[in-house]
Image (cartoon, rainbow, N blue to C red; front, side, top):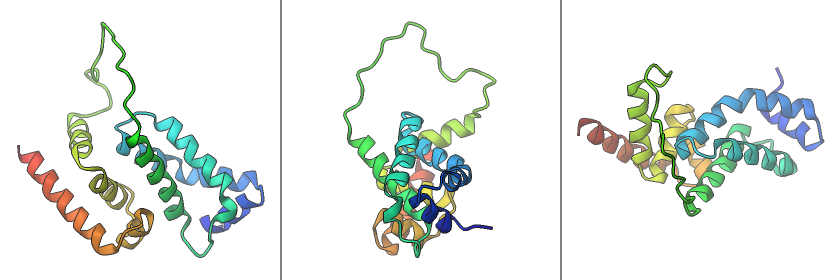
Length: 168
């Protein structure tokens, strides 16, 4: 099987099939990450911008690194920029609907998303990358550009905060 890193190198040479394979491998994980980072808003735009940057900067990818770490690093930076933007003007709707009963989102899933969204950005990033995407602490540290100890302390503090919020 061709590694992600080999595919990324081929993308730098313009290989569209290699890009399609990377996209197939990472589309769900990246979309899930962006959804958790933004609460579901602007996911498609951020997803597309992440892949555009992967293609544009494929020649800068260092094959001695993991592709997933590099790609998530791009996505983290885009999500951080997204959070810095001023919120859009609210749109008035007379028939605003909440999550309809019987939808595929369970109450537990809604509660988990609400709790996750309540975390500070730095802690949410660590939790999403570490526990939702199963990245090792070293990889999370590389994606976020912080020491491994910082990842550990952010995860510890986030888990304490989540436990306290869940009890409240």
